[in-house]
Length: 166
Image (cartoon, rainbow, N blue to C red):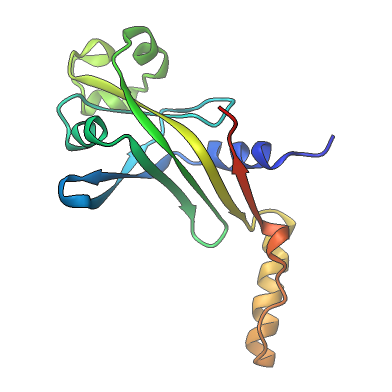
């Protein structure tokens, strides 16, 4: 069965342990910060863990529009635009809990300062140069350097867009 673009997007997204979460701060300034990815749902929703009094939590309370970007050098990149909400569900927190979060939340998954960020995507985009595409990219880049011509890379082979039906 042929893989859909949403399946491809989810597979790439699920391979990242960190992401850059971009929110809108007061004064229409964009703020970006790296975040540990707590989970990627089957429908490509993302989950992060944060402090309920953090700047990002306050920014999401004011404006739910967010952007999430993940990149692994030139090998792969995903970008997700959507809406974020704050979730204070102890059962969900326990389900998403990782030992590394203990450094930020010393009381563990029952820490009352924990807020989950749930990102529901409207649209996504990916660039994939993994697998055989990686060798094609390397070959075309080397050929371009040697010949002085542009690389012959077909964007459709490595790029895809996803609109999420909600």
